[in-house]
Image 1: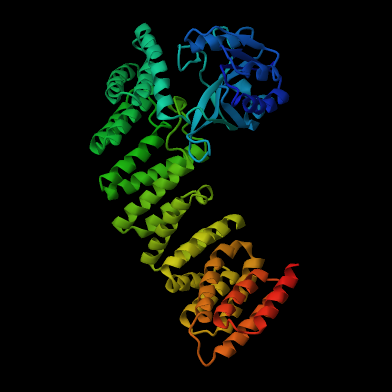
Image 2 (image 1 turned 60 degrees about the vertical axis):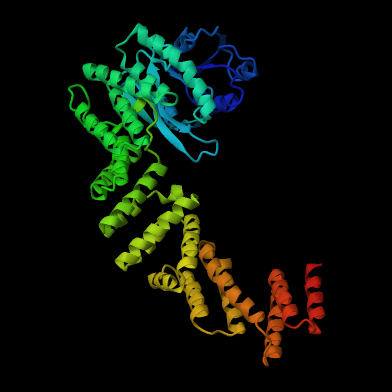
Length: 556
């Protein structure tokens, strides 16, 4: 048997079925077994678990996570062991299946997969964590430490498995539940520290536990932990220093936070510490943001650039997944973080008048992942247009637009249309010069004519019909042309509601003709709208009743 999958649970019925369903592709694709250890459930967890495995074991809880997990290792038949929590749900198992089916596992002692820690149930905010969850089973393989347990034989060479993602909702917690969690964890960690005051990981976990309840103690364990990490050249020092820098930053002590980042640079010079590590990504983001807050924008620009390049290497090319990245979720390795960083970099560039550099940063924004974020996209489009306006060159809008898929072009057009409503005809003329597409050009030309020429009501109606034809045949540009259509409608409404003149009867005649055309073409909603305007214009017109009957006939 290749793999034993083990897990512990207590009252996990909320996610347990989804968790175990997510494991089925692995269990069905490779020779494997599932062992579940219950630590005292009083809900339906045990009944649910028995639907997925015949090996459900029971353990009397004793405030020791390792002791509970070690029960799932007893008699394990697999060559390898993998563990997870009951609130973790695999959404992609291809990488794990390939790792074993291809025989690649023979080259490694351990492996990790991505745990995506969500901060909300809507899945809008998350942080990815390369979770050290798979190891070759050796005679001395066991879990160690009462809390924040880990496998004793997790060791190099290790494989960071791609295409293996597990959604986790355990960090979607309130301040109150966070406090309770810390109150549970801290006594266990202090017991661990008393047993072994030289274990760097315990200091890191105390820093994180006290972070929510007592900032002074969190600082204290940062200092004590770094003394141990320097003595042992231990990689957990990267995470301890990052927490320390963030603690200063949250207090508004930006210079002190920058000092901690310098401290991290010195720490990496120690023998036995890797010179380039995955945690550098978070340090670069934090450093650039601190410099921005201190208005040292010229210094921030190259750091933002370095962050962007490191992000590509880490997230897109799979580089720098060093031991420190398995200590917890990388905070700034998400598309949201990259997007925010690039917009902040543009702000720095605008202040320093480095417009071409600003365009490079805008090009690095992961637009596909951000299009549904209205607040961000409005800022992004605004930055893009300000940069283009200062360069007197809007061609970059066309370049970005051309790179998008059709469904995303639709959303992007909506943001352009929204900005057009603020900037008016001058901006429309600039977009028209780009010749993005024939349909966009036509809609913009009609809009510009309606603004700059004194068009008759008939000409306006015809313009509106042309725009509607574009909207109906080209979904991609509908959001942009909608603004032009609404603007022309307003002009028609203004003409229809204008004071009576000698030409009133002629205008009423045109309106009635348009209503008949709309009824014939099936545009009943538009016909009813114009009929209501006609009633205001000529309430005694004998043809109103006839037109109403025509509309009723179409509806029946």
